[in-house]
Length: 253
Ligand code: MG
Image 1 (cartoon, rainbow, N blue to C red):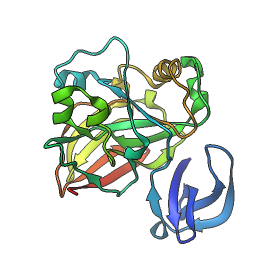
Image 2: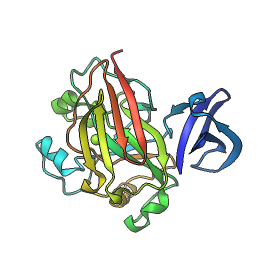
Image 3: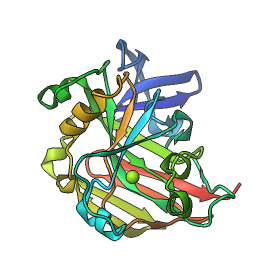
Image 4: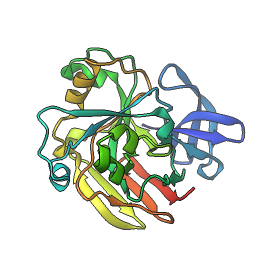
């Protein structure tokens, strides 16, 4: 099932993608929801970020080829950082280049959407707390990250966490799904999810030893090699096979 969050003429609702359009639901898949008789045509809805999380966790250097391009070894344990909820935008939303940075990079990633309260979850139980997966762009001010190592600053600007277009509930990262980034149509990154150093189940165990994850929280699972600059006027796309394409324009304020 592909779950989307949409704006319609009547307001904001969750829905499920069907051949003719989006079947609208009452409530939320994170708590309780119920289908309605309404199927809104695709051209009548605006896609929004599929969740509004309390927090976005992210993992650094979780693909060996990306760690190598950053001049680093693969870490012995996950490198955990956070992006603020206010960095989240949806499909089509503009990524705003901050005046503080001269070098903003794209990072195509698979995002885990947490579906229930998760605390001290063992890896073997991790699937029970996952609602599904979506595509994400871990936008990063690379020059700022390099200067002072403050990842929270370099990755925490408003609009630096595009999410979407849909939550795929049947997705399996162990199946070796392709994670692709295109800038203005040209492929910049492409790698299979099976190249992740730490898998999703392991990451959930690691994170929930530290903090409770709430329904709608997001885990970005790392990026394959090929990260590079995006500038005003670009269109950056993150495609995760079977989830869809997350497309965002890049603008200066
Ligand atoms: Mg990243």
